[in-house]
Amino acid sequence: MILRIFFLVLMSLAICSAQPSRTVLYNGVIHTATEEAFTGYVVVNGEKIEKVGRGAPPEGNGVDLKGAHLYPGLIDADSALGLVEVESLRATRDQTEVGPLNPNLEARYAFRAESDLVSVARSQGVLVSGVNPLGSVISGQGSVMRLWGWTWEDMTVVPAWTLSLDWPRVTVKPDAKKAEEELEEIGKSLFFVNDAFEEARSYIGSEVEDVKWGALKPYAQGQRPVLIRVQTPAEVRSVLEWTDKMKVKPVLVAGRQIDEFGKELAQRKIPVIYQFLFNQNPTRIERYDDHYRTPKALMDHGVLVALSPSGLAFDAREVRDLAGRARAFGLTELQALQTVTLNPARILGVDDRLGSIEAGKEATLVLCEGDLLEVVPKVTRAWGAGVEIDLSDRQKELYQKYRKHLIRD
Image (cartoon, rainbow, N blue to C red; front, side, top):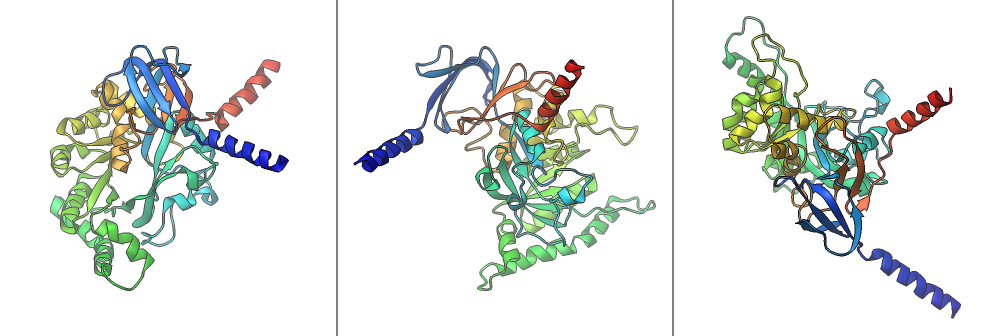
């Protein structure tokens, strides 16, 4: 009898714990990333946002935000978080595999959940990242990862969202004056990539199982996007011609002078992950602020733009600063916020559940004591899928350690 009662008690506790909790976050400045900010509330029911409203909140268990600013969790569309810990130590770098052809590899399997860099990015409001391999010609498939959780399994949002392709770099001889010559050189180095995609197309419908060609198939068919890293205008032009020829779906990770192709990129609906916001101009003929104004120039043409630091793990924490700098050089408040929330969510293919504060979406939220896109205000709280996240990290621990030491001395 006692065992039966004990079993019933355990069952009731399990049922109670499984029931979704309903919480009202009220008295805050709500930045939905779909409209201008307003004072209001967000009702969270379990993992989802139930309602977003203005003014007085409905009844229920409440959290008084005390005028703080509530944002959707920030998203870095291109990083090496979880794959790299210390750039200078080869043993801690796992973003590049041996060999030029690795389409069957998925970044999530190498993701280190306990990485100190992951917790540092999380404490700055970055809660989701496109973790993408690099360093080979076809480096592997990028994964969309949450930046909270115990293991890579429960931190995986999308196992494989893209194929990472490093576009061949060509050093043109000084006497090569025409762009056609530059394109011809790039074309020669593309033989390997073209051959791989043609092999993947030949594999379609084949009864022979091959892990590499099978992994490459959805990209060769244009079903998933190919992430292509480019640096120069000649490379951009060759990518556009190549994608037309191969009928693939590109996402460009780009830098300087990409705005020259703004109109064409918009017409082709090619998104851009812009990573050169903090880089200095290489020539004297460029304006000093060209790299700051590029996001606005692209968005004025209608290009979908996401901002990302540089694809490195330790830079992911700077995402909010990038949006703030772009806002200072032309983007509106809403546009700047979208470059690190809704736009990267659209590029990663997760905008149906992340990237904005809307009813029905996942309650992945960040609370900041001031404007999140400024440098000084602190991220004070965060929620991932409705559950509050621990924002402690290695840097905060060291700060407290040495602060106590200095005070004692």
